Length: 108
Image 1 (tube, rainbow, N blue to C red):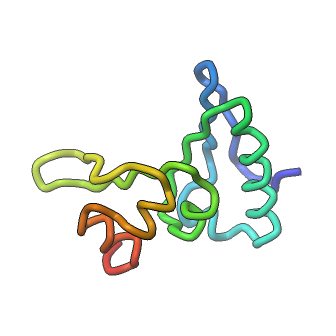
Image 2: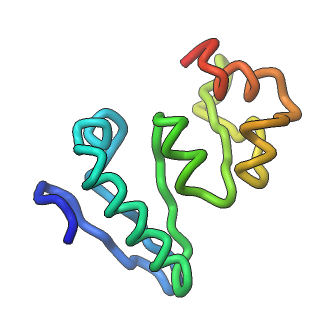
Image 3: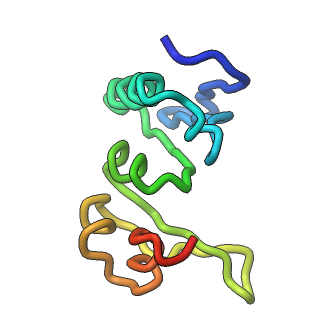
C-alpha cells in the first residue's frame, strides 16, 4: 500500500512507467517506512517496466536506481546530460568533475 496523496503511476507508453506527483521535497516528507514501500514496489515493477524517476535526493537515487543520468542547466541551453551510466559508477567514480561535485554535495 502506498501513502495517500495527490500522485499517480502512469503507463503512458508501452513498458515505461512515470511516477508522477512525488517530486523532490515532497518525497522527503514521506516517512522512512512509506519511502521503503515505494522503493520496494519500484523493484517489483522493474521486472516488466522501465521506471523513470526525477529526484534531487542523492541517497534515494543511489539506492533505488540501476542507471543514472545527471542533468543540469547551462548558461546557453535549457538543460543537458552531463553524465550517464551505471548508478554505482556515477556515485563512486564519476568521469565528469561537475557530476562529482553534485553527487558529493559540493553544489546543488
